[in-house]
Length: 341
Image (tube, rainbow, N blue to C red; front, side):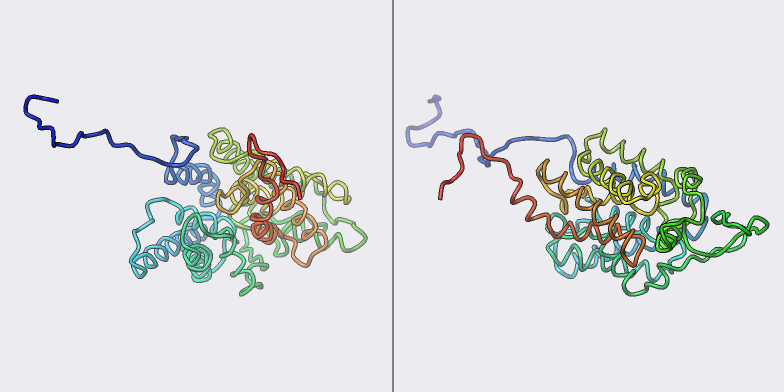
């Protein structure tokens, strides 16, 4: 005791914080992770704006503003702390825009953004509680409600050169189905394709102005996905098993595997949507099962279903199975044995 202390004064002990293990601290937080995802998608979004102009800008603004506004209003009405700064609503809006055709009306995109945040995220309790990927739920609602707009490809003269079809060489532009839709319809006629599938590799990789906004460059999507893997933001198991299953199953069913990987939303879904922390499995084995399931449903839906673009439905279906996958792939606890009946 010190000279000025009395025997009745309690001793001051250092304060300790007691929490359950494991005690692991990471350098990244929710905000930084979301910003890394935005950075990985930014080159693709900018390339789409450069090639498509104001239609791409309007779509991006509509989706992002609607998701941010919905989350802000929900938190205000529910008297909850604002969560805009975690960046999740920004990522949802960006992913939604990248999954939509560039000429989707702005008000449809806004409805998709509202649904993505309100019905797929906040109603479950906010970030970390949602069962399904919010951006894909928003896209699914738009697809179901306005299927004609999602499948229609409006091509103004001179915007881009269409698919090389015999007899159209002298035309500046043609209006018709995308390469993916054309391949799906041609497969119904004895599996014959009316165009050279290998000739489509270059447009898919570097400048594809068909389909959704995020399909403008497969090369940029792959670069962004590999960047996230290198940074440790996403696990390689989900995109590797997803893309590998699509390629292998396409080859087994007699279709060009590389064409099917590059076409549609496979790469966008595999790297940026199926890897969502909340809606994908926690275990390593579970992530491989999840990716394989996404790839299986994607190929089957694409080659045998009514819609050539089945990425949305494949990932959403597997999102619903994540609790079961986690339950049956949890590794045995160290030091514990199996319970005997």
